[in-house]
Image (cartoon, rainbow, N blue to C red):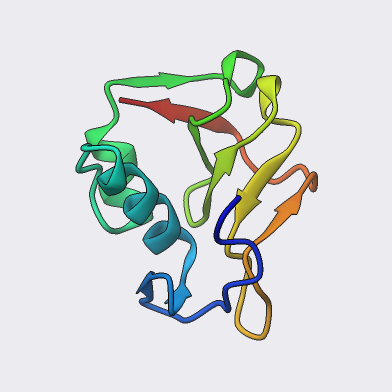
Length: 102
């Protein structure tokens, strides 16, 4: 939640600007996990791939081209870097189809 309001920057992976996978990789790296820099690398490196209903806060939510960090059990709310011109924010828009865990 400390990065809410940080601008979306394509390829960004630090607090001056994030894209979706830059945000997730930065947050995980800060806790000692290297999960990969891109959405696809994150999917490939996950130890567990589960349904959204199994998602817990901190899991990465995935849809094939976008990722976010689960903030509510079941994946109903998450934090993400949505798109150019937007900022890191909470959302509840249902767009993910699985959760990743390391």
